[in-house]
Length: 414
Figure 1: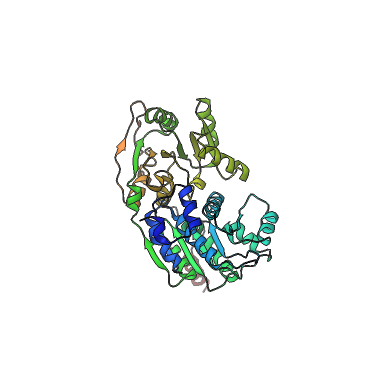
Figure 2: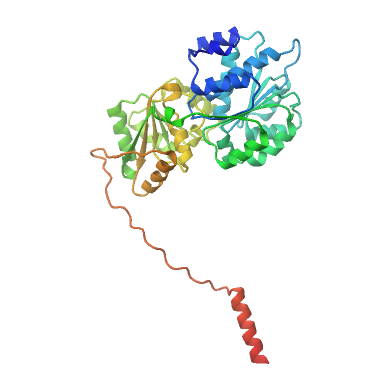
């Protein structure tokens, strides 16, 4: 199948050709025809499968077909995402594939780290497509200076991550401000029960699309290395040399750790940089651009890089620190093997984290062999699980004890 089968306009097909998009991915093949038919969508697909183009292409087609002449642009599409980086990426996708349309749609991004006044001004000057992080969108919405009465499409991208950021509480405020009659498109790599409950509040007649995650994950060579915590850095430098990885994305547990290890790797002559939420928006954008342009070989990042970043050529993803949830493991490793390519995913474990990785394996439906590299073997012994002391009864008397004492006292005095 090719993109011509969807009967997209020549302008969009030209943009696809220029971007070297020749064959639609499975999620695109499933979603695009349904969106063009006006169906609500609830799609489950592995990160890296091409979800963004899956909704951007048909929405551009529908916007172009329905556009009135000589009218100021009004917000027709609202796309909500969990991170600034994903917001900017989705907006860029709209720009890339809509650039040859006779009337290029006006796309505005609304994200934290930038002037809310400037963003609101751009919206008021005319906007067809509004792409926003959910938190900043609510900030703008509270100003009561944005007209959403013409909205036709609501898109939630990476909905499960937004749930973790408190989106469930924010949803009602958003739904109150947008027309009840609209087309709803939900995309997520996972659909826990809470996401299903949110979906039920948004749409009652969505077509469910669930693609086989194994097809994408199977292109990722997953490996687990047993290594002491203090030897993880030296082991990673060793693997960079032996495996000759051109670009590596390394996930860390916290912001300070990303900064510290990036500085250490620089001292060894490795082009490394840190990426986390404490960087301002300009620093984050510049760092990602340098990584995309391969000016950075190793990017040490917190989990803000686990969702939605579409960077070609990441040969390897490393779980230097394991993710807290099994779902985040899938999102992390999905930064490699993008759009049908292959890639490696490495995880470092020690005695303290082995049980947690077993849980990740169980929830992810995988079973991986443990490896050790000569010179970096895991040493020491697994700590024995000791039974904690029996609970000590507190000094505060229970209600039952107080009643007994009162009864005894009453008996004495009578």
